Image (cartoon, rainbow, N blue to C red; front, side, top):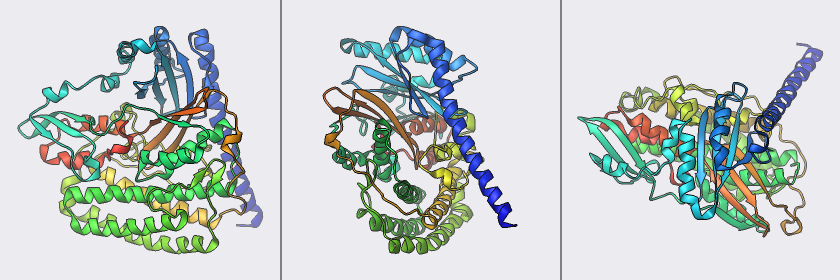
Length: 505
């Protein structure tokens, strides 16, 4: 191939990426205009945050608005993604998702504070008219008495420690399952002074303790959006580098827990060894193995020298080779296959109905990854494959994480190879910024799915943060999947959905 031909191909690829980004932006803007046109004064002002659109609705108009959003052929927001309600606030947020459009409509319903419990039940009843899964957001404590053939209290490992299990079954077949997360959930939003930006970054990591870089990046991206701040390219690359390292670490932690549940001590030790190598690399970059506190508004805390990058680059082939061996052990061991294969099947339609994202959705065969959104960090600079499962069973939910680790290693390799030079931060003094009262929604593709933060700045310069993670939906989907499963496969099936306490809010 001649140099001229190579140049033309590179130009064509760039034009395709640019056109895709323009279509994505225009698509979101078209939805915003359509909503404005359809509802007029029945809704409040419409705010477009790219993948998320937010507006206010009074309870009296809610049913009509949801009906149009779901059934209008130009909109088709046919999936209930979440309902977030905080007892100390006088509003709740309803998230309606369209997989085809890659956009979530966030409906903020405000109600009189004195009538909040009555209004909450009324809102849920309105949503249930159109979305069956709204049932999961009602008070379901009665199921503790209705499902008492077996009660299993929380236990180790981590994927089984954040809920109690209530079961009904006939013979050895589970007919009804209820996972009660009362021991780990909290119904509070997070409140900080907006001037305490660095304190917020250091504290918000607890929302995802195995992949703590994602909450802090999500928070910083939200504030940067409010300030219309452009981030240095090298800083964005460093953020992506940490994201992929933490993604690998989180997936390896999941595989550790799976090894523990299926009783494979050999694999458990082998995976722990590889995770230690990844954590050591993270510590080399951030100074911490678990809580990085590395992201800052406008960039990152510090740069990485070339020697560190070379060390990471040299370690990638070794990590890849060892993880490939672990995968081969998983996929060839007859005992392990007997505990995972063709058990806990969840098809694409079921996975979508519970608004799953991340590996659990892709294991069912649906290609959906926020990193492919051209506006998400700078992942558009790196070609990578979105791995898919075929059957959506327990084995697919494990193997899909191995495949995602390989893609993360590929991305890290490319990030280091073409790392741009330049600054890694911008001068930013939180106390010198005056924020208007406003709201913003920020999102990021974390190891378990799409993680969001709803942030609202109050007139007294305090910022309220409501986290919206993927793990509650994983829990609801798991309950459905357990129906019809043999009791002997209970723990392996639950563990395969990766339900953990930090996001059970």
